[in-house]
Length: 423
Image 1: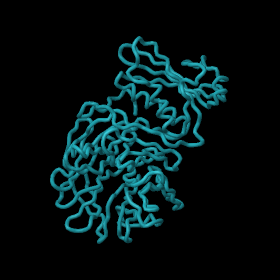
Image 2: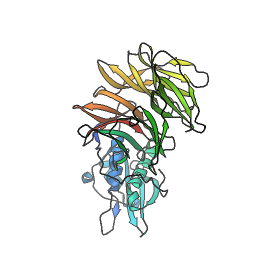
Image 3: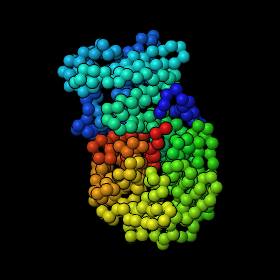
Image 4: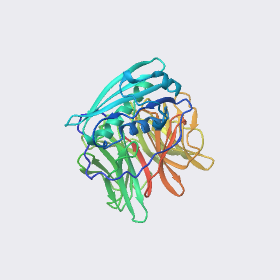
């Protein structure tokens, strides 16, 4: 996210975050890095712990192993203050230092990335913002450091949307939060189920399904204003909305007195076209980055399997062959990995399939009843819903299975996660 741009203002006021991150597994080859507490000479404590957020972001990624502040020998904030030998003795590869200042109109963070082994400053950058943007500034720093040291775009400034359920109050909430679960806000609440939230490519609105009208209807809701619009309420069932990468079309599932099929809505003209017409169940469409191919789940081979559909030629090809249950497909933006729910040993788990070789890797054997995978926009992580102690929680796993963490809710069940694009 670029700082100094106007930030999203949601319909509702911010509430305390309900999601808390618990890292359960990281990469064995994680890079040792020290995030030194940033120098701050203000009279009052900062509204946000900038260093703590950066430290947690990088540590949670699994790509880095962060050093506890109490184990640091010094607290440098300028390059000339760094004693590289001290950090080498602490077995650190990199050190991030910085200083926060306030000039009456806003805050500035000057930060430096130091290479311990080469004994040089690699990068120096400054980011500015208001008090309410300090958390965004911290995520920006995390993204900067992560991308510079790994070559992979950071996703710490992205968002997630998800549904929480309070069984006792019969209440369904569509919520929105930072990727780390902080700053949760309410988008929409109902006494009727809410399912299948999906982001628009520009990150400005959410499509989702609500049962409030007596049947499943698809709605759009703008995050900046809260404006809500019923988009599809055709007779029968309307579900599983998915924006095309160019934002001009919406794939969805519709059925009226028969088996579900996949349709596409042209958002400019309002025209609806049918893509599949099969006696089996066709559902859960998701666009690939080429803006032409849709992956979806179908029972046309007996049990649910993943297929691809060319929206121009209407050619359908089967993609999954291992096991008798593979569903809810998602494809990484680089087109290399197919992510889906796979049944293995009577449990439902998240699987990754290499689209070049067909090799399948089961990512989540440590959780049960896994569902609703959503891939991070940099293709490195998958967030999904899992069942733990009779409650539905959110969890995440890297596409290689090395990194795992959970985002359990303090209140109620959490499901149907969707990871935002980078915006």
